[in-house]
Structure formats: structure tokens, C-alpha cells
Length: 267
Ligand SMILES: N[C@@H](CCC(=O)N[C@@H](CS)C(=O)NCC(=O)O)C(=O)O
Image 1 (cartoon, rainbow, N blue to C red):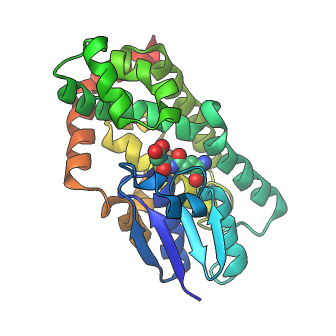
Image 2: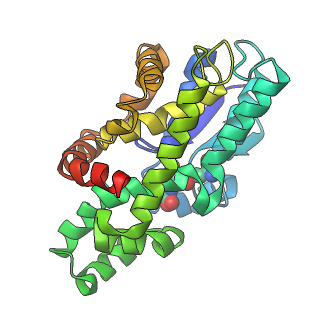
């Protein structure tokens, strides 16, 4: 029974699964989504009614929600376990993974806000020929999932000056405080590489691509931990999938906004 993953080039939550599959040494078939409307195809909605990636299909079993997929992989394929053995460390791993989930208070949401505010909004600004809300509104309506529109409209209009951007930056700052304190050991939740690393590496990559690496400039344990993650073969499962266009947009606008983002942190 093979594994099939529906995913996307630059989706941070789909990258989590590719990393875990590589760490566990599991082969899989790729179904790459464009997320340009194909997520609403009835055949895909039957697998994932929320119309998001990732979705894992294993024989007759369909699993959605990236954190649930990570746990499913560990249960279905116990070899090379990713969850810690120790109950306290396992609980800590679960709690950290939940921080990614927690709706509009969560870190996944924060990553989306930062990505749009710094970089991806510029596609819409370019399509609209400027930042005038009356010209941007049709571009937003044509390009964005209605669910995302609720919280991203302000970010598209105001970029990094939207108040929610600072809130999301501080959310990562607090997380990294927690990481720095945990990393007295080699890994975040215990003595071996775990599901916590699989879950967070793609978010670290996104922060770095957006030139937000100043968040760990004074956090040396995080810097060393991130270097160790980069040295693992599974790291390529994040970086190799980015399209050059997405990578260039994140890097270019990240560089342009880096000084302002660092100032926001200290405001
Ligand atoms: N809680 C879900 C979040 C899934 C999610 O938001 N996926 C994003 C990509 S990272 C997506 O598919 N977005 C497409 C859209 O909003 O249209 C999970 O962890 O699987």
C-alpha cells in the first residue's frame, strides 16, 4: 500500500510532511496542487473538505491536517519513530505542534500573515498597478480564498504597517524564546530529532527566506540547531520544492522590508 501526498511547492504545512517522510525513509507519490482553484475541484474536496493541503492517502485511508498526518505516519510506520518515547517529552512535542494549529492565534496563521505582508501582497499590488484599495479589491477577490480574505485584506492594503504584522512577529519572537530555553539538549523535545523538528523546520526556513533571521541573532542555541537541521538530507524536501519565482519574491521583498521588520520588533 503506497503513500500519496497532495501538497504544494511552497506550503509550509505540506513541507512538514515531506520532511517527516524523508526522516522516516518512506517512499511516496507526489500529487502537486497549484492552489489556484484546483483545491476546489470536487474530487479534491472529497478528500479534503477544507480545500487545503496537505492530504495523505494510504491505501483506503485519507488523512488531513498536517499534525494528524505526522502522528498517523508514526503509528502506521513505527520504524524510525519521530515522537519522543518519554511521556513528558511526547506531551511537550504535542503542545508545541498545537501552537502551529491554533486558528487565528496560531503560528501557522502568523507565518501566512508575515509572508503576505512582506512578499506575496506585491503580486496583487503589481496586478492592480498600485496600492489604492479600490484597485486592489478586485485583485484580492479574484486571487484569494474567501476564508483568507477575511484576515488578509488589511495586510494586502497596508503591508508591514498593518497592526496584525507586529502581533504575528511577536508571536514568533515568543516561540523562539521558548526554543532557546529548550535547546539545552540537542533537540527541542528530547535527546533525538523528533516530530517537533519535522513540524517547525519549514517555518524556520520561511522566516529566514523573509530575512527575519534577526529573530535568532542573539539566540545562539537556535542558530546552531538550525544549522544542524540544514545539514540533514530531509532539509532539501523544503528548499528543493520552492519555485524560483516564489523564492525570489520572498528574498527580494524580505530584504526590502528587513530593517522595518526589525524596528517593529522593538517598538
Ligand atoms: N491546519 C491545516 C492548515 C492547512 C493550510 O492552511 N494549508 C494551506 C497551505 S500551508 C493551504 O492549503 N492553503 C490554500 C488556500 O487557503 O486556498 C493543516 O495543518 O493541515
